[in-house]
Image 1 (cartoon, rainbow, N blue to C red):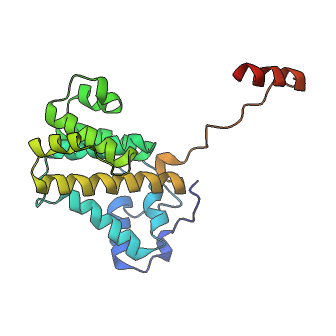
Image 2: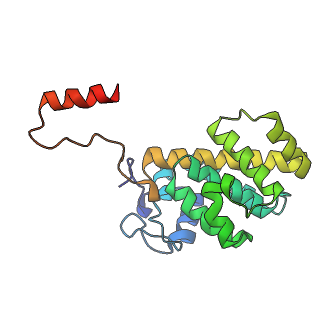
Image 3: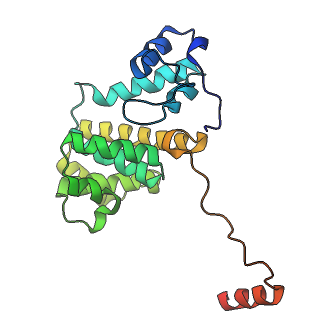
Length: 214
């Protein structure tokens, strides 16, 4: 379950929310009967519906990257979005954009290699520049080496670079929010936890383990 309350259909007052609920869920109450056409639970929408203007702001952002005004190639955009989802550990963003990456025209080999692009030979120079730039945006918080940026400028226009930067960082944010609120496929327990030693293990044995580590 998400960490925050979901908004059932009968509590909606905002017309924009009502329209999106109908588009996504038909006549169902998505809290009582969860699920979307893509197979997700759909609770991203129902949780964010608590703040209608945030809901609208974010969903209009989805429209931004799909707009015909965009000059950035769809395949490059999806490389950034999918890689960002993988890097922040968001199974929701990663899983959804694996599908979108295929639809954009990336091959199955390329889609599967996004997680380990640096040792894959299925990407061209432009795609590798985009992936390296994405890593610098997400893992290094925008600390982009000059060589990476020069590679970007060799292959992309300045408008394309701005669009890629904005869209990739937006999806980094979506992945982080999804994990924090445990939405959709990111409703998972923390796996990095202490594993108990066998019952009856003595303090002397544990002390020996510590010494070996040292």
